[in-house]
Length: 226
Ligand code: NI
Ligand code: MN
Image (cartoon, helix red, strand yellow):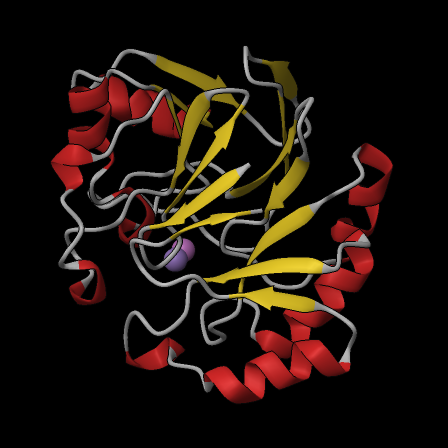
């Protein structure tokens, strides 16, 4: 599998030959100014919740790529009003089999207002199960005991977790989350983008290493094998 990082919580994973883009927020991210949004290809776009720093480029990329958007019911309704109709609505607890594998929506402890102030439904995390590997993207969330359920749903090969603190889990809780979901490989997201979430990379790496975990922090624009 390959994982491409576009900054903040935006990344693309290739699964079974399909390109899955998550939480598109690029043009508002000064750190991602070298990314050409119009060059991004996607077959699916998964949206964890409605906040601006997860949906800023959603409508433009969905229109450009014709990708199918997977998101909460309320975000599906909001997208429909903007002419985006290739959308598969879901909600927490539900799963659906797509042509790349299965998506299961799980709890995220956060909030989810859309940029125009409308209600975005509940925030979600996703478990992606495929013939290649399984992974968990928590979305923006606090550490929550619901994460203890995740090993019952799938064996997680890698997890994409926020580590920026202030609005979400910070590094210490992300380590606890990795233990709860029984996963040793973590890709850190939702850090450094703006002042409230800047982290010390060395301290954070050391923390994960001390706890027997591997923390991956790809450069923006970098593609890694995972
Ligand atoms: Ni958020
Ligand atoms: Mn966020």
